[in-house]
Amino acid sequence: MKELLQVCWKIDMETKKREIKALLQAMEEFGLKEGTIITAGTEGAEKIMKTKIRYVPIYHWLLERQGF
Image 1 (cartoon, one colour):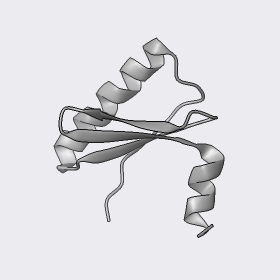
Image 2: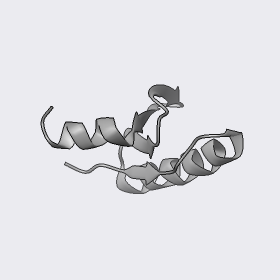
Image 3: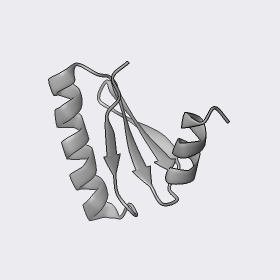
Image 4: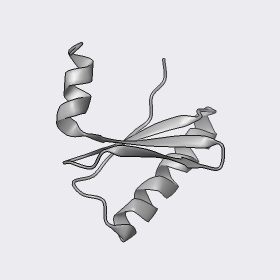
C-alpha cells in the first residue's frame, strides 16, 4: 500500500498552502486519492477536488502504526 505523508509542526495559512500544494503534486504523480499531513496537534480532513487530505497529530499516527 502506498501512502503519502507531509510533516509539519503546526498548520497556519501559509504552511497549509505549501504542504497541500506539495502533497497534491505527489498524489497526482503516484495516482493516489488520499494523503496525510502529520502535525503536532491538528486533526481533521478536507476534500480538495477529488482528493482527501487528512490532518493527523503525530501521537495518533504513531498509535495507528502500533495497532492501537
